[in-house]
View 1 (cartoon, one colour):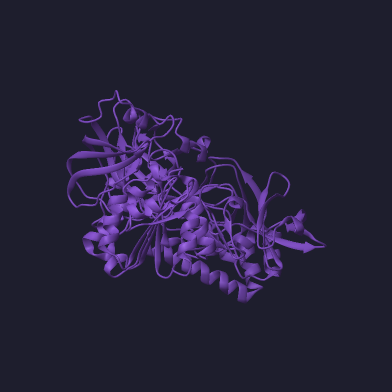
View 2 (view 1 turned 90 degrees about the vertical axis):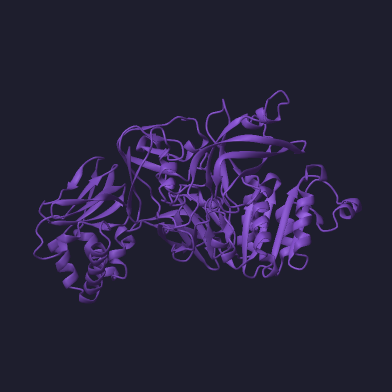
Length: 349
Length: 242
């Protein structure tokens, strides 16, 4: 099928395979169509059908609340073309840079699922072919029997790798976590669908900026990849890094050993703070993790308190539950006066 | 120009903002900055998110969804924003904020900077029309008599070159001017086609009458023609642009 996208600045034409979502066929062709969650929730990828017919496999997707369906608006991340189509998007759209990691669909096999806390699992997947992605990106993950993809950030950072690591938080009524957290499920060895890499909140050393990461809970995943790339390049020998990791209690914290190792690699310039929202900080946790700092409070409040006067040349990365990300955005814009192009996050709501 | 009371100055927090009802279902965002009040469209031009849920520090307004930002004094886009905010003129009297019914001609970039008198004259010769979805306003090759300003709704605009029509159509938005070869001598036929995508309201102005109004205000007329020539130039440089 031929797809034409009329953007505000120009038109693009590309080919889509049978049942392939408009968004993914465009991204795969190197066209940076608008999207954030890529999984039917945020509504960023909305487009308007001008000509032709489409198929919507998930008419109940939460992102539909942003659409005027009677005007032919639809979600590019969900819908596939049934005929040649022409669609219109209200954004400016450009071609991706040469060298961008183009997303494609792929299969993989689950090679390990480790409990990191009572409601967080670390998942290791072996992709069928080597993958390239940027630090901070995510992949859509599909498991057998559950329609659609869910987005999870990669924890590791390697080039041309078949190893993908994710952090998955148990969600009430979440069908992927229901399956994953059920002791009766056969998780290891299960084949899964993957689509990616996706996401714009990427870190690359050419930024030449100090890095601020504010993560709530499983949002730490993408920050781990940023730190991993920073370590490979010895980035924090030259630039400062500030990482704020928010959890409710010490029982909800994970990756503390890994975070300690990053901190030990850059004692002078890297600061890693664990913020506990629902529990006082005990002397024991400071003794057990001497490389890390511990503070009581919501993660955006702790970050605001400790970052005062240190926002020069900062690029911020945010991830976590939507209310935590919104609160962090508010702090960074209103108090820290960061410009919006230096606040990077992928919106999942 | 009619005026509608919209709120009390005391309703708006100092250097804060509030969504208010302007009658007829029209919602506006009223913002205070120092001694001044400003009125804008109540939803983000990007995804219809209510702007009153956004962030505002007394000078810059930020939509919390995708961090589009605007200068509160002008509505001009800052940073990531790809579109300006629709601006409504306000007047404050005795602790009340009034919204003045806006002239769409003031929103049109082509007419920016024209004097009040010339704008009023253009308004006088303009005919207001409402057109249903799917109606073709003109096609390639039609005679050129009128120039249009889009007041509300959406119009698809496809430009052609000789026999060929470029692939891309463009959806015009509020305040955009089209059909401008009605202002040019020696071009009696349309080189583009315009079709209403939804029910739309337009100002239709006769090209010859408009030229006469602009001739009476040479400074303003020069400004409009200079903008028009750069608009045409842009079309020549990037095929398919308006």
